[in-house]
Image (cartoon, rainbow, N blue to C red; front, side, top):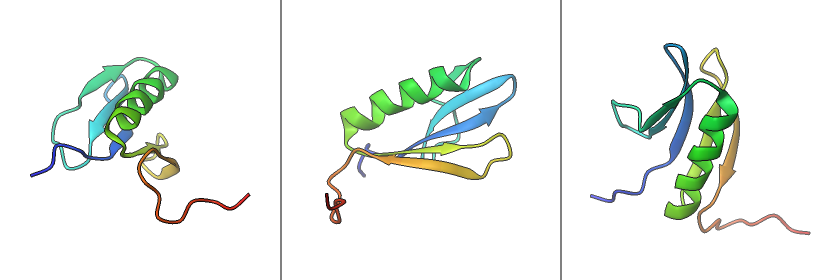
Length: 75
């Protein structure tokens, strides 16, 4: 099984958490969302995976892909 998994930034008890897709436990927790996003981005860049950022309501707000995009944007 691959250890590479997309990283999700999700609301956590008193702040925000970085959690690998399918993981029950948070990789790391933060007081501020910006700190969680920064750490999640580092992990996803290192692994070549996607960073998925959720809002306080749990809905996906944005995604950053750090993998090998089969459909890179033209431009």
